[in-house]
Length: 135
Ligand code: ECB
Image 1 (tube, helix red, strand yellow):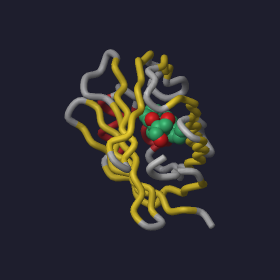
Image 2 (tube, protein in one colour):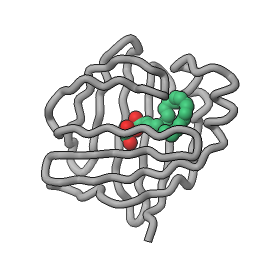
Image 3 (cartoon, helix red, strand yellow):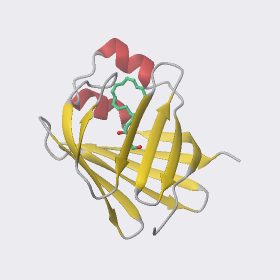
Image 4 (cartoon, helix red, strand yellow):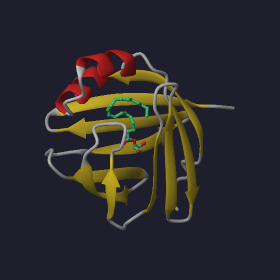
């Protein structure tokens, strides 16, 4: 296990989230609500098993997976698409590819100090999120 992402992480900055939602065809009213939200990531990492909960006052989203094994993801409550998802290690970075209707879709997570970094990408759009570890 290169790095342990386990913990509770609170959103500190959310760069370009609006364009990420647009490229996923999220409607205007939902975007206006979602862009204002604080998000909290609760991550449980146990060997090669990973649970990531993304929590907010509006909607929650949770995935559980085995690193290195492709699985079926349905982004229920987000853009409601079906994906073939694979999460792997690239050094100390967790890299996710989400194969489906949208090209070049995925995300990356890495840790710098007490910050959890995330890049969410789809087609030519990149959203950058930074979370701070909750004590
Ligand atoms: C779940 C909190 C955000 C709720 C936003 C509600 C509506 C917006 C609809 C779609 C926007 C697309 C994504 C929302 C952004 C973050 C949610 C999880 C993104 C993700 O794939 O996180 C991975 C990696 O941490 C784990 O699922």
